[in-house]
Image 1 (cartoon, rainbow, N blue to C red):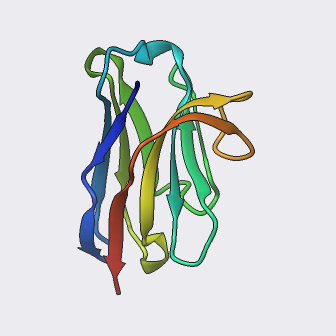
Image 2: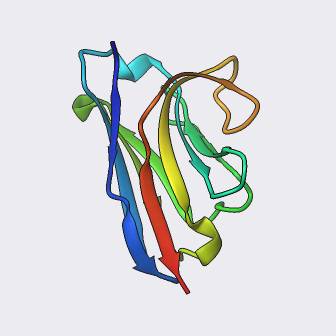
Image 3: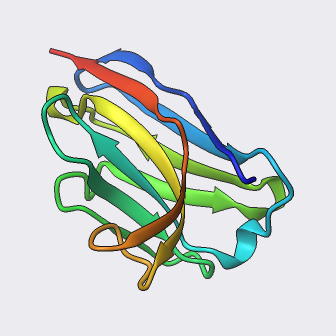
Length: 124
């Protein structure tokens, strides 16, 4: 069964940067699927952050647009989320997601596979 493994989370001062990575644990045709990042803060619902389609097209939540960049390296079966200018309100558990359907979009989608999450804490 496919497992997605995130890494790169941690604590950072406001204004700092982090890069999250997500890799697949099993043989998986990464290239053809829409991938995304979601996050969940304590006491809040999980929300979409960004999505990237098989052709590299991307879309972002307004709250992170201009600060976060989603990318993928199909040769390495790795998904990334570069997070710059981090704010305390970005503090959350971040989840990698695979096979977003029916559209490759960061919200209102069904997710085929979830990672276990990596914690990001932004200190004020």
